[in-house]
Length: 445
Image (cartoon, rainbow, N blue to C red; front, side, top):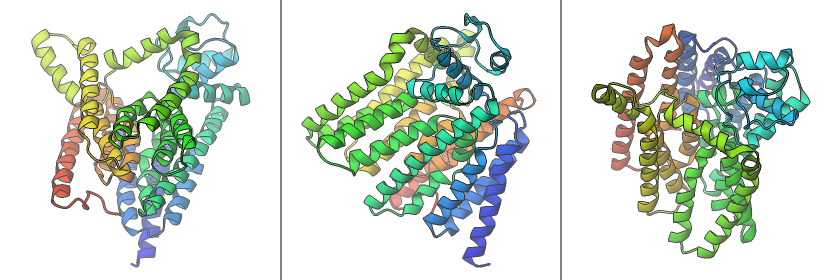
């Protein structure tokens, strides 16, 4: 079988596995989920080795994403909260002011349907300004059809994905890198299924982050460079707060390169744009937004690693779940780890930034109480530029956490034990082979 035939074969298998996940896998059907992901990831790994054209890979990725527009989210019910918040804004009600169960309005049939379907009626909204705007626009366009609203949101996400690919390719070409590296992200089954298929807003965050990387390292000069890159970072943070971890690494670069005036310019503009994005939230009700975030560190537990081990010790010593104190403590430790990586970083290249952020964000997730599979999407994007590939394997291994929803979660802890044993083994192996030869990695393309 020649290379063209092999590429066609793995493309068909790759697409088939993803279509199974998009159209036939419900959240409690772990055997179907793991089968679909296994098929698509195996094909993905072989496809990366056989495909010789970035254009062909992009055609495949765009085709699957267009199909995903018409697949209603089956592995997540977050859409009901998205539309609920958007509906409140269209009713001129502050989405941060009330718990859904306490909203002082008379609900029509569709709004009762949203309330009954959402997974968080007793939690305050945690979606920042940019996302709230997207939700409001969606409801304004299609008021009372959840399927239609899903399509509108996915069309918006498709637009953001176009931005991500455009700027990622510009970065790769600027540094004379193989443009096929974008396929690590663009053809990754988890990125397609979880972000585009199941409407996880990391896609919006990554889009802004890709623009930041381009303008910070490649495009424009003078004040324009600082303005655009600062706006892109603030936009990314206004979609998902996690990209705030880029701040210490950017500071380190500007200081180490003795670009103090650029440092002042960049962070002056960043502070301004950040304020513009978040002032509406603070004027509305920032306390309740904070309460929603506190739940993430003190109540939620999912697919954790180090936290679960320490929690087990806590049960032995204290006799109860110590998440209330342990979650915030681990968050502080994660922040110290990220700051330490930034402080001791010596190189200032894009590859060094991507690598440092990759390990800093990984450390944060290792110490977190909650790590949903789609959280690995930003790690996958960083892998495009860093040279490290363990995050690609993590994006597959993370789906083992869906065992939580199958048969009462009886296989959940064995599944995530397998996940993290294999993941830490992959990280150790990649560190070892790259120590022998910095050009080597776990995955060739």
